[in-house]
Image 1 (cartoon, one colour):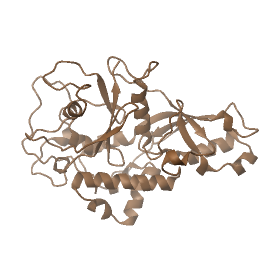
Image 2 (cartoon, rainbow, N blue to C red; image 1 turned 45 degrees about the vertical axis):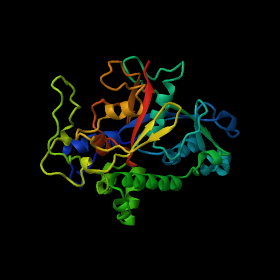
Image 3 (cartoon, helix red, strand yellow; image 1 turned 60 degrees about the vertical axis):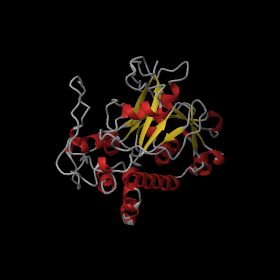
Image 4 (cartoon, helix red, strand yellow; image 1 turned 90 degrees about the vertical axis):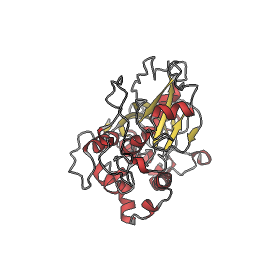
Length: 349
């Protein structure tokens, strides 16, 4: 079994951000998911060791399946396949599907693949993905590795690290445009910086990634100067993240100064929804996750003053996100490495 980044020692960052912001960004970065990868038994080469064709890995949420291929290949070549198979198998022909037969999207972050599978499992009769208390069980995502004949007409992208890099950079630029109304921040980066941000993903290096990403992603200093206090009855420690407290003059690079927060909404076995998500509402109050969900999915998240319970839950980076979370703060601290806040909605049991 392999793990990433759980014991690595980090040098001090070369850029300056509030400590609480860096904490949440690091927690997001260090998140991992368990994967069980099994070679399709019908495609195992002759003379393969059929008792060892399953590989377990604790994969970084911010990484991508093509970046895991070299490690998976080393394991298979060292332990499962013989020399003859080593010569004929081509890594560029390998592709994944879930145990249920769903083709996996190479250009999605691994954490999003995992969360999307979790919410899809919530609508299946045998699901153990959620309970009435919205708790989420962490089980290995079981993947089938195919060694030949990739369905290129369905994959959309060739299963290579280079194609994944191009898709990743495209997502960064789209998120940049949604935030600021242009892609100047991304296109203004030198080529070495653009390459460096991808190297940070490949090497799973938090500081290398954020050294460049901090020039594009907004800070957590709010643009509003009179932020409303949390309701007196609120006992949540998450209603106002320390990094989002008013701290003087508005910041044009701040999370509350963006035109819109890059957000995508994922439903179980359903479409992906995308809309403009301003950081504040018309009345000047912060745009919260509860308002966002009740506006887009009112049947699952009833709008006030309704006292009906929510029929679903929202996962962001594998975390059951508090409904009072502010969308601007989520965009600055809980977005994926590609700049997007992925909200995965599962059905409560």
